[in-house]
Amino acid sequence: MNPAPEDSGPILVTGAAGFIGHATAHRLLARGERIIGIDNLNDYYDPALKQARLATFGGKAGFSFVRGDIAEPDAVAALVRTHGIRRVVHLAAQAGVRYSIDNPFAYERSNLAGHLAVLEACRHAQGFMHLVYASSSSVYGDRPLAGAGFREDDPVDAPVSLYAATKRSCELISTSYARLYGFPQTGLRFFTVYGPWGRPDMAYFGFTRKILSDEPIEVYGEGRMARDFTYIDDIVDGIVGALDNPPAQGENRILNIGDSHPVGLMDMIETLESALNRTAEKIMRPMQPGDVTATYADVTKLHALTGYQPRVMLTEGLRHFVDWYRDFYPVVR
Image (cartoon, rainbow, N blue to C red; front, side, top):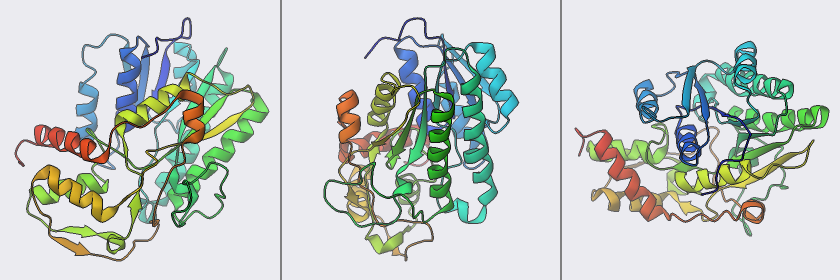
């Protein structure tokens, strides 16, 4: 693990009570960084899980938490100014593709207004060094698997969900800020992150709950979808590696961060069944609005920059998740 850079001050991690933010903050703390975390603890999914993630920081030196909304520009600016923030890992967002169908304005506020508030705070910070922010594989739209995967220079002008459109918009807004104000930025296009402490709205999480409760699972796309499932520890490797290697002044660099091994949905379910030692009753459903058929990350650029190399295969990663799930929800065995 690389040591913390000298004289660089604390890091602001937005979405610190979220799945990826929680894991990233722990990794940075472990190498001696000071972390200021912010999260609004909304009820998109069970806030008790978010509180439980925050509880894992109890007693850890160097971690401070502020409950707040990143879409409040004055609050974010004051946080950056008060703590002398020079590096930001911006992971807070309204997640979920299907949720955006019925709740579009939640995405406008969190993803667009929130991103803009973070950018404004960064551009006014003294000696600002690097903003790393979360984008998404959703920006690639619905396209078939081909070649070595989706590349950062592939077309991204046909989003099939509002969530994807907001993430692409954030990339464009960041490009304008990088050119106008000169501070370095890196946008990371995440590909289906999974693992312990994950999000309950993700398929593998919901399938686990239903299988252990002897409930049938709904398999959308009639099982023909594929995802580039990426284990949380591998994702954090990429985030920290990117943070430590900022681009040139005035550049907004876009990088894929995934496993680069897409797995069919039915294969994922079979692997999960094996980890649970249960067989699922499956109800086949058609594709849902906003879903894409497949995702597949070409991670050549991130590997060249940081040496990024995913290490955890799906069989091992789902086993780790199931162990965590049974410990966290002990009533359901």
